[in-house]
Length: 354
Image (cartoon, rainbow, N blue to C red; front, side, top):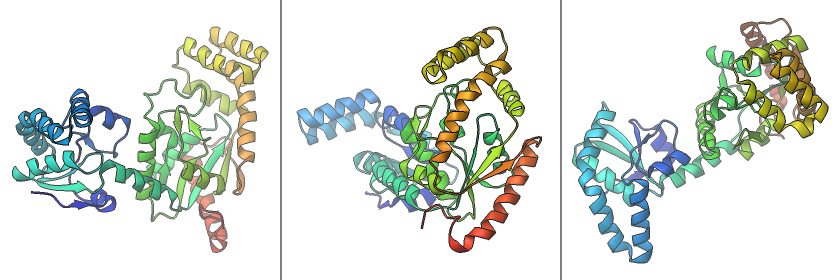
């Protein structure tokens, strides 16, 4: 009994948990956000079946696959039933072939309703590329290091605004110090999947907020299509006093180990300059984090000004000095609403250039 597959947009909109039946390593590399790893084969078993296919032939590989997966079927059913309340599940593998169809057959025989992704994860990857190429009404939030842009974006999200938190998704603050006190980063592939999910979710929203980033956030690369949108989108530049920025950075990195702060400083020694790098390191060793931040800001301010100059969209500076995060978020909402009304008629607020 073959389960008729459905295209990615229907699959993603359907009900029920998503079971990714690829191997654990495939899942770890990247998966549909929210999916559950539900492998038919372990990594080792998958390699055995693959070698059998290339060295012996497809029929023997199929027999080996049944031999390896057969004893697990009862456990597959028990686990699947525990994951769904309504008896409906979504299943996919890499290409939408034998692994997903075999799992769908087993679960269907057990009385569960199953949807299979046509073309598998490979088709989903095409969907992410197509989704990220579609326009959105973006507003980029820029500002020098320490202006609390990420905190402002998260407050906007709390108040119901559509926000793509690149740094939150990438688990990195986007600088040489950005990985400190942060979880391990996802793969670039999985970052793209998470961004595409938000991009699709916000397709009908008037404004989508995002922080201005370079092409890389730590080890992850921002999708080319999204980066192009960001370069053309109108930008609001957050301006705060240097003292506020230093205080914010000192609080942000106050729990970091001095050795990690020094290692991060060494990574930008050449661009910072030996004299400034040595001064910053001495301050860190003395526990004078505010003084170290003051030295480091000189480098990051130059880098920021260079990146801001590359943008082709309008850039409007707004002074947030003395404002709390909540006050700043409300100011952003009011400002963006006014700008949108002024520019919507001629399309300047769209994410694509005319």
